[in-house]
Length: 171
Image 1 (spheres, rainbow, N blue to C red):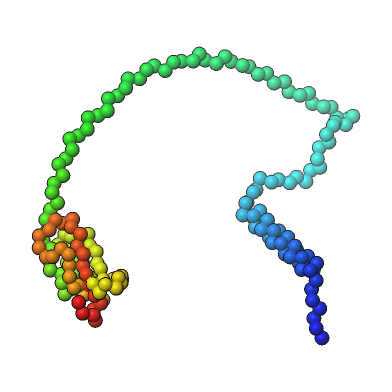
Image 2: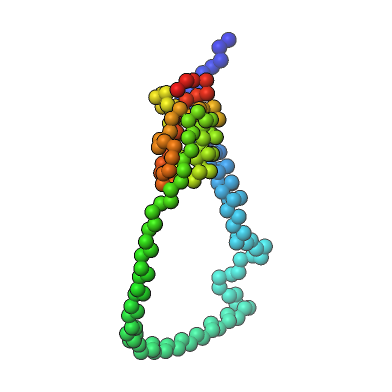
């Protein structure tokens, strides 16, 4: 026996009911998260809007408003303009200090970087010497094939480029 198919009207009804249920749940969550505790309920019956014959209406309180005149506008006194302080004489920029870059060829890439930093060179770059453009993620798995600049005296702010290949590859 075949199961009867659901009609379009039933599908729409189920979809609308599901959407309504979802909105109800979202509303309940929103109300719980809002935490609005300013709502108060009273068990007292609401007061009658007009007094009954046995009750006397209390007289309305009298309110007196006193208006005072605004104080006269005061012109601000001109403030003396302060002269900007004189600029200190520019310090002469000294030439970068020289440092001795060691020969890093044949070293493990990580050890070569450590040696260059110990010598005072902190602007370092490493490249794939094979030309494949690989990144040197694990520096300990690479061997330095060449360096730029070569070993010797250079300004300490010189960029040192180390060209390396994987440990099992030849330069």
